[in-house]
Length: 336
Ligand code: KG4
Ligand code: ZN
Image 1: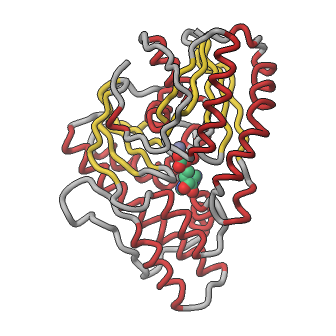
Image 2 (image 1 turned 90 degrees about the vertical axis):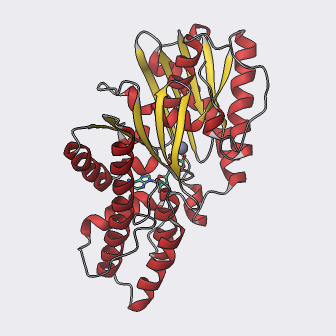
């Protein structure tokens, strides 16, 4: 079974071919840089960029993989959550193509894609596992029992971890997206006596709250002139606070659930410091850490092709509607 995956939920146009037997055949991504000018994703620009890029990207993908369009057995596309207009571009193209080829099309949950992405790697985590999903729109800990069986153990009450990186990068004038920029600046920064808050770590539970961090950072940034050295030190303090907070909650969740596997997924999972810290944290508990390569942490078509392929292979039928779900709680998913 050969599945074409299409991801257009935000500002990345991702496509991939996943084969049930041979695994990932090819993937390609176009990252829209036009948003950098505005310091955040502009939904209308995102939709227009997807329209321009999606078809040429699919053409190039098929040629690279040496696959004829008739060889496709199904199409999986991100149906939500995400930006309505951006999602509609992927959904419309996926459904039209599937109709023309008389093959099924399946709308995939974007976060399910992220949760399953580590299984695209050679050393794939078996079910069940604990997942830390940290992206630009979500921060949550999930108990992943099996495909479609997810229990959310805790999530952010306000900003996502990625949002904290992005907004803080704006405060420091480091550009967009903020995560990679902060990570780079932090690697040149030093530990100072500035200690930013670790929200909710001193209270029981697995919830997160990151909205106060950017305000704390803003106050610190105003204390003295922002030269390059100071910027890097502040980036270090911010990354340290976010990583520390996530690590404390992961440790707590591992102890609470007894899981032996921790999976990091989502764009913030590309953060090197987070990976190092969680590696130490799980080792101390005798557990094991899994994460996808950086390109599969951030949005990509491979995770959508893979999630769609798993569901179709398990007998789920394609859906018939063109609708997308900009808001779609993960807890509403069920097994195929
Ligand atoms: O998963 P993703 O590509 O899109 C969403 O579904 O949101 O995540 C994007 C987020 C952005 O906030 C970006 O700043 C953050 O992931 N990010 C990082 C890194 N790379 C991307 N955050 C920290 N360190 C990174 N290396
Ligand atoms: Zn994402």
